[in-house]
Length: 289
Image (tube, rainbow, N blue to C red; front, side, top):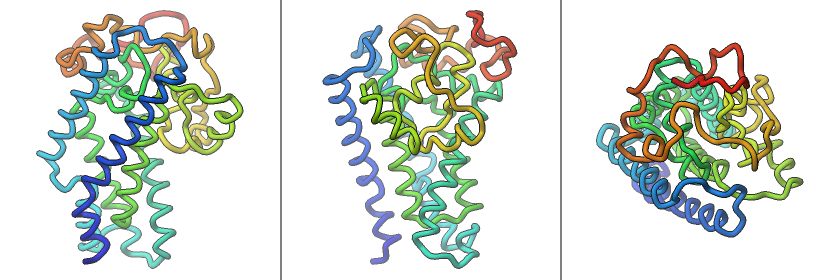
């Protein structure tokens, strides 16, 4: 049995094992050393946030049974993509593929803040009134489908090794839960880690209710992209204890936490105002419609 066949047979248990293992680890860490006091019932938020995760997973498997790994195998068999044309060392193709796919995720994240229709979808992620490990898994189903289609396009152009796609997916899911964790890191460790990866304190700024802070720190994995493209912000103005999490439009648990409300959120309100096109940030005005 070849490595690609083995990966295709074991991709689901590999990803599920890492997902539930990291989810449990961060959840326990949040209990032992929380960064902030939660403001909404954890039972309400977790049941609905994780319910959305399971619904999205079912929907993706229904629409794309082989997912991104299957697309990588198909591209390899067809000889599509840069790394299927160029003869480069396998390890280099794996490392470069993971880095390039992470850059695409950064660009995608900026895009869903910049395009009004896409912001409608993405505000489901930002509307969470608290910030913990389940926030990192909470996305609208249409955004999840769009993200998968962008991955497919990236894989067709890039031609990454199948193992690189599995590594990327595991890292993406794992670090998304880590940097959304309501966990306290020693300040020195945080400063050291954020030179390479996105830490919880770094990404929490992105979930501020203030628009200029929400339009910073777009990275999920590598912190390089925010520093390189000028979207890096070190700390929130009000500090991590004083900052307000969420968006202006949805401020009650019924609006921001219930499963039906999350599914309907993109279809509520106007689309004329959205986060990234505001010219006067930080003035307390409502900017998320």
